[in-house]
Amino acid sequence: MASAEGADPTPGGSPSAAVRLEYHVPQGSTLEAGDALWFSIEGMPPGWDEVKVTSPALQEPITLAPVKKGSTQSVQTNEAGTEHRIRSGLRPGTYPVTATSHGRTVAVARLKVAAEDSAQIGRFVIGPRDAFPGSDTAVSLRPGSDVRVVLTDLRAAPGENSLTVVSPIFEGPLTIKTDSPDDPGCKCDDGGTVYAGHARLRGDVPEGRYTVTVVSHHGQQTTKQHVTVVGRPVTDGGPSWAVTGGVAAAGLALASGGVFVVRRRRSRKADPSARRQTRQ
Image 1 (cartoon, rainbow, N blue to C red):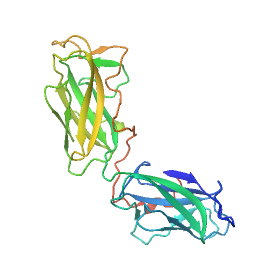
Image 2: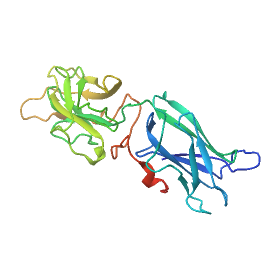
Image 3: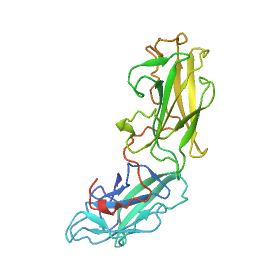
Image 4: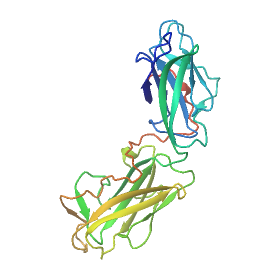
């Protein structure tokens, strides 16, 4: 859910903080071109009957009405089986939204729209294969150690069941896959598409901080992680990590610029009608 303070339907139509326009999406608060969404409005005066919501980002205007006569709660007056969406092919950016009642502006908001079919990374972690990925323990990997790589994407590209991970710490490219035995089954990944795999670090990697890169969405999205390598190469029977005061190998450092909490995987065809009367 996202919202913006709006306006009373005063004679001059000037916004005030009494009316609140909110938009809702089936999952989280990130919108992209083609996504379904619905609106609600609060704070309208008694006797209001209709509000029109318009934006250059919307496929068509959206009409809001009271849930019942005299109600302060609103409902979209969609035809059965229909839903409203962000225009497909829309460029990423922030777009204005205006709510009017009988020609007067009653509320305004802004929609932040991401690129269509962009990734939404929940986490991208690398750590010892025999430890749970994402641990808060500060560790650094040792050369020659076995590691597990896990990436979660809430908006995985359709049909993309594997990704390639590259880094100078590996002997060669690493393939991480869906339905992998290396998937840790963490609740924090619930609903996201999880890619996982394992590899052995090069035994001759000098100590230092290295970049791990994965390209997804058929070459359109690049996400980077950083990991610290320290200590002597691993020998049989030795631990694959060294506890240090430095950077945690499992820490999240996304070059794509966002940190997200992954919940249920959103359906692009989700029908939000069942939630129209639910206040978020």
